[in-house]
Amino acid sequence: MAEETAATDAVTPPGEGTAGAVPSAVSEPAPPATEPESPEAAVPAAPASKAGRNLPAALAVGMSLGLSLIAILLFAPKVLIGVIAAAIAVATWEVAKRLREADVLVPRIPLLVGGQAIVWLAWPWGPQGVLGAFGATALAVMVWRLFDHGLRATPRNYLRDTAISIFVLAWIPLLASFAVLMLQQDDGNLRVLTFMVLVVCSDVGGYVAGVLFGKHPMVPHISPKKSWEGFGGSLVFCVIGGLLTVTLLLQANSMIGVLLGVGLVLVATTGDLIESQVKRELGIKDMGTLLPGHGGIMDRLDSMLPSAFVAWLVLTALL
Image: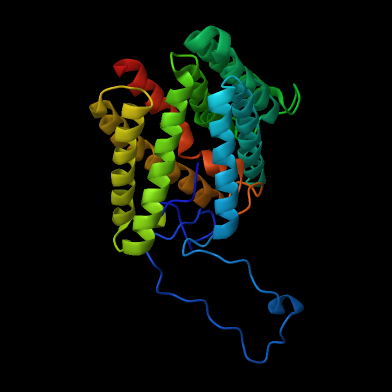
């Protein structure tokens, strides 16, 4: 993804992402005058945007990732399968680690191995490979969690942990596999590039409109800093991006670009909200720390994952 949208969260309770859509009127209280200044106080803090992120670091990381993916798609499209496989492995590990910190014992080995099977089997066998790998992994998760403390131990929270494990399996590797399926189609590299550009348009439009104009919270109980103005900016940018990319890259009817743009704004925003709610329930700000200014890999994939499925669905049906 590119930069955080105004649709991500800024100064919120632990567990939220950041991107200031609705400016906060509450400032942090000053420390007591008698409190001695720590040595760290003399060190300037990294510059942060209104979104609460280190904006220069976020821009540098986002630009580097974006240019690298564009180069791969244009010159070596099949390499993207390995990139997707690596990204979902790291994202799955991040989510599993955070869940285990909250005492949700998701079985990491079946999730990691099965996630790789879902992605890689999409290459030679398409949807059948994805479906077979997903079903086999779901069964492996059920059995693994049943006996992960031994044959004589009584499983604790079995239903909860198994249900959450299968949710993670569907949330990350299953949705990511649709990018691989799209890559196998005619002009697949351009289709993947189109959906990635539209997610970036949604992020940038939401960020700009939210920071500049955000006043009306969209879903304050989930993401207090997400605004309707930011959503409107995402919609405008994404529809324009859809018109241009579908017409110029895919040589298709411009109305398909409009439909795709609207659809991706809806699912990208929903994907961001889903991760925000998960992080809120876990009491964390980011899933990881791998990407400066962004958080973890999963914090960059939250809106990409559902968008890959919708892009595959729309483009497969209409092109």
